[in-house]
Length: 208
Length: 320
Image (cartoon, rainbow over all chains, first blue to last red; front, side, top):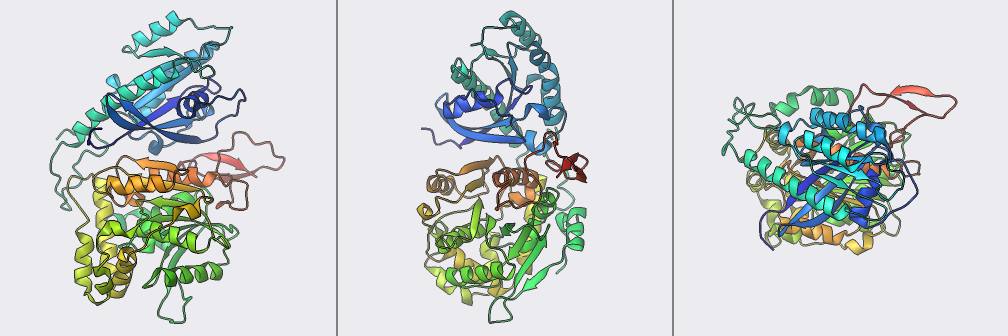
């Protein structure tokens, strides 16, 4: 493998409660699914190493409680995110309608450098169920209207498209991270005089 | 010593120093040897989180953990050992400190050397466990990574200026962001405040040949916390940690330099909270509050109190 620096990708999963965020993460990381619903409390994360274009990257996947909405988890939680995954339940139209506000919430909290191009991925989960209520077309249209966000129809239960979706998530996150890194290397020198350290790139958009 | 760094002038630090007393506790026959501790949080909590500093640190370097986690009802003790010249002496001293504080078991957040000794202590007390869990931050399992093994026997006679030079060499200030720069300034100040025997003894512990036997610790919940930027320990040392603790939760930080508890305190506190949450409702809980967020209260006699969720002090939740 390449001797390049190891990369850490921070991925955040958001969406209404009960859409299957934890199940998707568990299916991807542990290859396990449980029919039993247990509401996530607080936030938790799992790590997994994946290979993207011959590069080993470590994904740190943060799962949140759906009820968490509008109750800020604090910047620490959102800081340095490389990709945001928005999940809805294809059998529950309200969860689809909430996507917009989840996206806004993320952009406000994480305030990425370039909100327009920040990588999102939308997952329509529970396609194994019969009583589907949000058509693929409707979801795709919405995704197209939002700067062509990639859209996958998944089933955490039957492991449909989960691997594929997370591959895309990792790839897009890596592209984002590489870009962020270029930014970080700019400027080459920061002088650490007492008067000079207010001017740097930490958090703000200074290209100096 | 004059404290002029931004962090030691910050309101948070000043408030920490003005609200929590620095206690000196002598547990050795030599009365000049005293542990220095900041003990914050409810004394009713029997299994607190103890923070152990790296070579260059003093107890107050954990002020952001003490202040941040206190709002979640967690009892945090930042502890700084007196000069001990070998690991056994250190472990005996620490055990006496725990006895003095009447603590059966503790969670330990150990940074670098602090994390190494925490593992040694857990190993040392494995027959009568005193360690409930470990959070190892930028730490290591074998002192050979420092390549000073041979010369460490002579540290005791080196003047403090030379010892400080040895440490300062690791404090890169190249290409770092403001928060990392502040953390380095603060740590340099702490380093300046240490005397020769404190420094020499810690460096001796840090560099004398010794390694941890992690298989003896496999029953202890561990979180391995590390920073992935260039300042910190080499990638090889980090890999060794993962291999030593395959069952551990891995809390990677993208950046933060050598002192993430200062430079990335919000992220570090979030990881500490997630680590400590697994003990909710057990005898080993470090907090008098439930660290999981309470969704809705079903209790008859709710009591209102302010606790902050991920450092959001304005949130109100109901506690029982």
